[in-house]
Image (cartoon, rainbow, N blue to C red; front, side, top):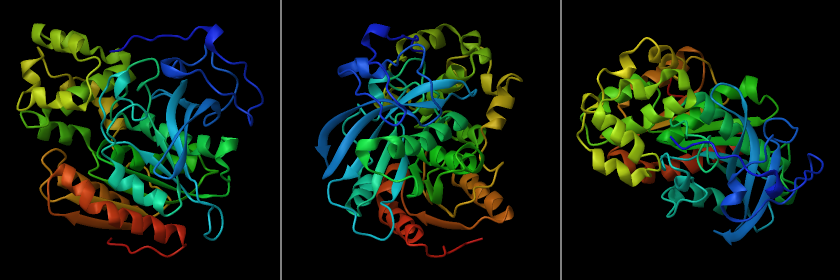
Length: 382
């Protein structure tokens, strides 16, 4: 995967107080964090730049502190979007931290760089309601190191720290008392659900009031069995790359045959469109033995299974009845685990395949979060 590239200290602005972060360099240099990272804690903004307004919102590119899959301090990029119209609702302007869906594994695929933004059906209604939106690029997308694709602990921390960064960016004008929601679909469904499970211990100061997660890959071995030989096999390749990036001791290369090593080298910068090149292939086409059946891999896969902790905020889970990529039954199992733990869960299905479900469900996501921001009791389907 992408080699670690450390920024020259000469490119890094001199850091000021933690509550007054400096503006960062332009272009791709923005994505190269200072080495070592300046002092601070997770969610602190290292530097920022204002981008051209979009969707009637002031938009800021931020580089902020977070934690890697293994808990090491890292820098992650993302965007903060604040509607230009003054907030006229009760209390503080709400914040939605959005966990992005799959963009790819290469640096140029980072959500803050990737165009077009196919998740506008989810994000536009949030901005139209006057809510601020924080969108993480995740670990290793744009920034040094490989992207830890669908590695839950990494993604959940990035999502929570994006909300913290939005609050700690003075020009955004957001309050630490603001209600916060977590939202995502597909890869982002996993990221949002992981953020919800981690929030009580990792970010207890955030006022998390709701979690919306759709098309959620809760059980990665079950998802992999669905993808192997299927139309979405390329997502399985990205998962293998992501775990190899998160946990180098897994040593993915040692499992690869000649074809696998060739693809491993040529797909380091692959974006989501590369998935079509690998439709209906099998993991056995690229390996001498299945890494996901290996004793080194299985504990890492197990620790990234959702449902082992209980989120404290109400949850909205949704799925497509004809989802060809992510099995519905493993999402239903996540619902059942949350229900068994005593958590309020709203569950909805929508007729359609994976991508169309995101569009069909978007209005219901907005309404669910609006009710949480209004302090209404959720409807539970447990």
